[in-house]
Amino acid sequence: MTALICLRRLALGGGLAAILGALAGPAAATVAEDPGSSCSWRLPPPPGCSPLVKVGRDGRTRGAIAAAAALGQLGIPFSWGGGSSSGPTRGIGRGAVTVGFDCSGLTLYAWSRAGVRLGHYTGAQFRQGRRVSLAALRQGDLLFFGGGAGDPTHVGLYLHSGVMVHAPKTGDVVRTAQFLNSPYYRAVFRGAVRPG
Image (tube, rainbow, N blue to C red; front, side):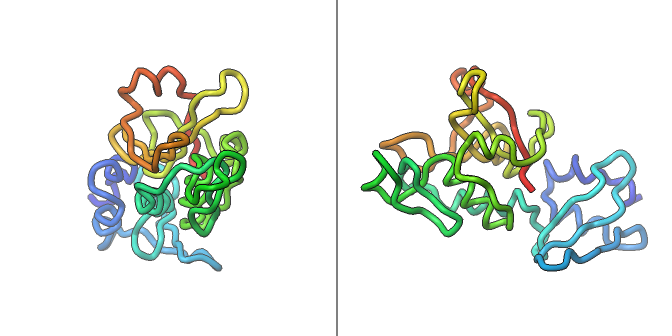
């Protein structure tokens, strides 16, 4: 019976650790180590579910690791051009006097904690991963906004239930926001990408 558990559906409600625990036993998935990383793959998937779920040794997905890293920066000031894989930095131009993150600096930092390298530009990040629909969003997926027909001008990380964490603008701080029910964010939503 555990072989019929759908990882995708359970990931939304019970968390990946509960899913992997439910797969223990006679119908358990096999584990293959990913050389050179702290991740493993659970194989094979139950029928009708995603083919592979990459998890860390602590049972968290890379997206969950990235989301937790971004949440750890709540309250850090926005700094234009700020942020690196090691944390908040002094920005450039109008951000040169502030240590913090801009939107793509926050997502770059968060995903670097999960072992994924992203560029420090929203337009580049928009092309660094697999597109996902709103219905298929998972924790850590990148959400893009604005820019008309050009590159998006803003990015945040999906958390849950229509909530994202992001570095909004000069004078603000890293914070969470409800984007799914926001008339502003829904009007300028460009799509979502799953890095890695």
